[in-house]
Amino acid sequence: MKRIVIVGGGITGLSAAFYLQKEINEKKMEASVTLVESGNRLGGKIQTIKQDGFVIERGPDSFLARKKSMSNLIEEAGLADELVHNQTGQAYILHDTKLHPIPEGAVMGIPTEVSPFVKSGLFSLKGKARAGFDLFLPSKKVVGDQAVGTFFRRRLGDEVVDHLIEPLLSGIYAGNIDQLSLQSTFPQFQQVEEQHRSLILGMKSNRPKKQPKSSKGVFLTLKSGLTSLVEALEKKLTVDVEIRKNQKVTSFEKSNETYKVRLDNGDVLDADQVIFTIPALKAAPLFVADIQKHLEEAPATSVATIAMAFPESAVPNDLNGTGFVVSRKSPYTITACTWTNKKWPHTTPEGYVLLRCYVGKAEDQSIVDESDETILKAVLDDLKETMNIQVRPEFYYVSRWKQAMPQYLVGHKSKRDLLEKKLGEKFPGIHLVGASFDGIGLPDCVQSGEKAANKVIEKIKAM
Image (tube, rainbow, N blue to C red; front, side, top):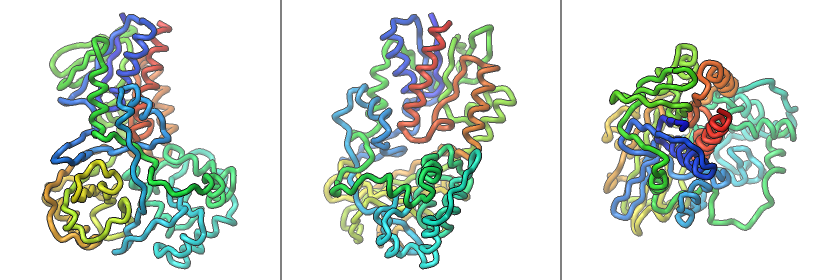
């Protein structure tokens, strides 16, 4: 009997457990799986609140439909009928004190249509002219990695980056784009430059032909909340997978060709293979010095969200769109605001508005540690100025995510490869996967867990 231990019960760990169980059953293998979770629930950052007809996500609220790993898992969990696309609508950039529509045709901030870009109030005439240089600049062959900001500033200039690209991309990674790795976050843009020379021309040629405008967006979620996936997966993990909640791994040691995994309740689990899905910073103390150093060099930022429910009459501005992101140089606490009732109509009862605001910047995360009331006041001050909201919400929820957003700094991929090499040499059978290494989106985490499961199965078959 081969024994597999999974450390961490977030979506990566759940996916690994689900696909391990599937392979073990299909191949009729003699193997057992134990999933160890330090908290009292599975799902990690996936947490859904249901109150008075509202469906509120405290963590991730959706995923990209084109990344199939998440929707495939949802289908296998029996929840395909629950999938729903977001509603499309105008998105905005908050710059200075005004909400500016994101120019039509902008792809991740890269302009592909001249007229909307030229008419935009987001940029000065000088900034627009500098972005136009991209049409004439030669491509640059870069060996190795480079910062996202360095790349885009070279092609399009500082103004377009600071006013449009930075708030859009920082909204995904909650980081400083002048430090984030292009290779590990948006490698496709470097490929566009290499193939087309001009980013603008390359993105324009890659865009699909104009279709009639659709209300169906590029994101998916579950009508009953993403926690329903966690619950469905937990139910599907049967006798083949033992789930241990409220138990924490305190150490592990190699014993011949296997491992002994020690828990804080004194139990020791024997394992042939161990999959660590917890964040790098939490895993670091469990490893020897040189691997620990690698893991501690993978920083993560802290963010908080606040979901607020208002009656429609309290929000005087017509929410003709889905929300806005905030230019880093604007004098606001919030970094983004989703008009959730517009983007996801199923989440909000008739006659109400549901807003979800984000706080915490890579360069200043102190607001995350403030009290709920302090965060609420700071956010309401911003919304009063930008959306003319004058009253407190009927209710609100603050969710803090400490060191929850991994930062893929320049060189991340090469460091990841070196880490894998050291693990293979010192700890064969130990796997480090999840958001700290392989992508922060839900589909990335699911794919990371599934790949780890497949790798483990292959290793066990070879034993």
